[in-house]
Amino acid sequence: MRVIDCHLHLDIEDRNRKSMLFLNRPEFTKEKLLAEMKDTNVEQAIFNTVDSVGDGIECPSYPTPIRMYDALEYVKENSSLRLMPGINPNSIPKNALKMAEEELKKGRIVGFKVLSGYSHFYPFDKVYHKFYNLAIKYDVPVMFHTGDLNDPEGLALAKYTHPLHLDEVAVKFRKMKIIIAHLGNPWIRDAAFVMSKNPNVYADLSGFFVDNVPKSAPAIASEIEFAMEYVGEPHKFLYGTDWPLVKMKDYYGFMRKIVPSSFRQNVFYSNAKELFRI
Ligand SMILES: [Zn+2]
Image 1 (cartoon, protein in one colour):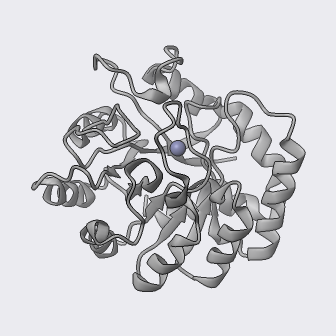
Image 2: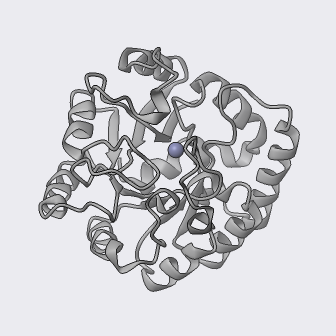
Image 3: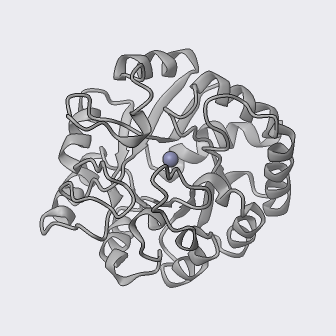
């Protein structure tokens, strides 16, 4: 099956400080990524980064930001790699909007990522609005981290990550396409409600486990199945892994069993193709 993975993270290999996600995963190089993509029929991989519209100033709870310039360098040689720069409201340089717009025109940037729980701003904060308007202008989505946090230093704040906050963004920015990352896990029912209420809200299925398929897999599967049945619209769900936190093959095998056959073509491929306009 043809696959688009809409949720991956990248690291800049020659930086002296590795991104937190890659600290214990030295084997996750770009070569490894491209081999995994080939092995799992992933045609397009869409990376999101922490603070890459910024110029490297730290989030309160994410000490290893990646600059947009470096992230663009990472994806530029390969047409199957695209970028959704993360917006860190603690650091938005003057040229960020202009630089992002230039790359949106070229199609290398295909949306933005908001990481409220790490940067400690609610998703409806005015600081994000100029990026939301840019996303609307180029008809690309904004992805919001929701739910469970990768937070070894214990500095992230869960209150910012509840999917219910996205209802207000969806209503105020009706023309903006919103992706609830991780389907709000574990607030999956809340996420499903926000999706079914708002025609402009979608969700990705990334990050439901780290490393290996867990013992709780049946419980996770039944929650995702509930959300799909409740929302009832195959075009609302997108496949993503959260690579490098999981191996692509393991995650694809896990999700393929959960997603009903009538949803698969949409979820694994065509929804992302349409939403990101790739
Ligand atoms: Zn992620």
